[in-house]
Length: 118
Image 1 (cartoon, helix red, strand yellow):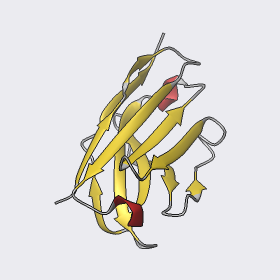
Image 2 (image 1 turned 90 degrees about the vertical axis):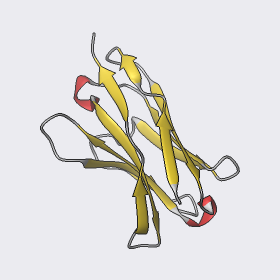
Image 3 (image 1 turned 180 degrees about the vertical axis):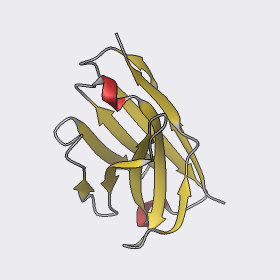
């Protein structure tokens, strides 16, 4: 059974940085795509970043140039480096794992809170 565990969230001042981690177990991590999503209070969950099995990355315009997604297949971990954080980045951040272009057999982590505030 797939298990995803996120970590690295916390409170940071505007302009600061955080690095989130998501470690998987119970799967052959190398053959799965990985992604990060976030959900702010009262809003729908939104896509933040993804990385394919071959390292292709995608970002929405809202985080492009500030966030970087990476993966370490040996550690079965995906990372989200977040720089120049803004108050509007405040949300619960979730990682997602999925197979192929249709993201089949997908699973989600439990989420980690990121709060950007002075």
